[in-house]
Length: 287
Image (cartoon, rainbow, N blue to C red; front, side, top):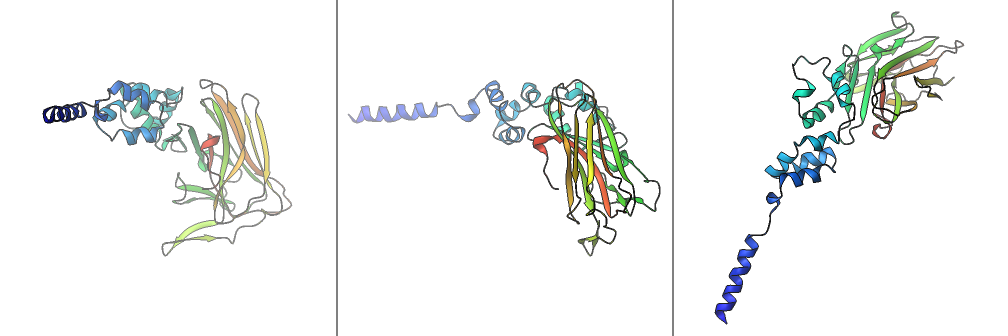
């Protein structure tokens, strides 16, 4: 009886030691699981053990996360890169990581990146890439340096009768719905004794008439909105409108504008930072 009991205990111990562990899961099976997770979760699981780490580098895992036209987007991201790296030399995980950075192109006046979680495309177009009426006359406008802009400079309006800010871009947008925003700020912010302060003496005219935002696309889409600029001292994303891209491989031209051309009064105290074009689900209303 004692011998049989001892044998059973021993057998149970042996069977327990033979049970599969997390590290025993084949790398190919791990990769199949990772393919269904969001990129941040893939990176977290890659720290579990060697199998998960190696599986996290599988090209097919990351190809499913990349936009269909990622080669076009990567071409923009590498436009101002001094290295000799090319898309062909990089793994899909490396390409995804590179595209999630803030990549400048067009002489540093535009930026492209992917949202880390969704892989959605976000473009930013600086004030220096926009056509601004009167921008060369320092009585009306100045380009000022600031740490509050991703481009480190904004266009600041002292005072003007005719406000007109326009821009456009040609781009292959992955399929989806996109939102266009102007990033604006009433007042001129600066730092004093390490604290942020906002000068408001030039702010005027925005409560009298709304500004007009407009966008048009090369395939006939159009949006118009009217909004009063308000909330001095805060950067606001003012929604211009939405458009839909139906093909990732078609070059689409997007035109956008901000105008207030009622010449019965002047307006001033406005900072123009950039125009953002992002997947509609990836944009916050205020930044």
